[in-house]
Amino acid sequence: DGGITQSPKYLFRKEGQNVTLSCEQNLNHDAMYWYRQDPGQGLRLIYYSQIVNDFQKGDIAEGYSVSREKKESFPLTVTSAQKNPTAFYLCASVTRTNTGELFFGEGSRLTVL
Amino acid sequence: GENVEQHPSTLSVQEGDSAVIKCTYSDSASNYFPWYKQELGKRPQLIIDIRSNVGEKKDQRIAVTLNKTAKHFSLHITETQPEDSAVYFCAASPSGGYQKVTFGIGTKLQVIP
Image (cartoon, rainbow over all chains, first blue to last red; front, top):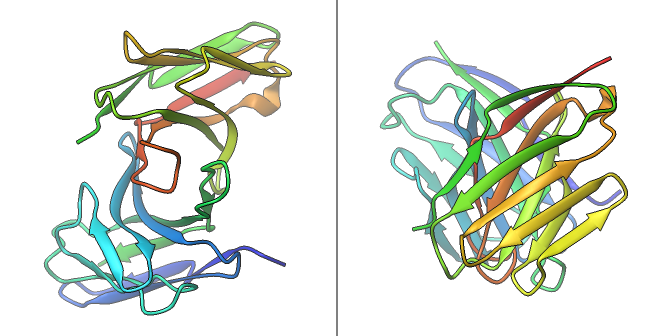
């Protein structure tokens, strides 16, 4: 089955620790995105990448880092510099040739204790 | 950068009535406007989209209208059903979803049987 896989689904970490969320897609999509979802704030863009080895900051990139070494993978690291990391994180991808539809993963819920 | 405002944040309608959700955007370069539906505990999924060369688009009980001059677009759901209950997000993007996609805060729609 083609799709986007995010892992882990739930993650608990202590304050001050870096955390890496995985996002893998086998859809052969070019662009990949990371969004953060908080109640009442919608989906806010953290980072996006249109091609391998290139990525752009979104609206709330501070305290986060990403890499895009392979087309299929776009991991997100939540660093200790992120002041309020507890949230639901969604990864998405889109192919350059399709209508523009974002395909989302099932999300990762991070709780920092 | 782009700013998408969405209202109302919550909406309750009786089954069979219509529901309207409105969004405004700020960047005149945006020309792709998708709508996503997120059911409880699930990932957002595209339900309809419209491009700036079109004023209205319909798909069964769902329609979207776009006024590019006023920079606003709306989602219309007719003959609402309980399964329409979900959070709906509008979004805006230049040249399709391959580029930066900015979302509104979401509207929680409740359809009362």
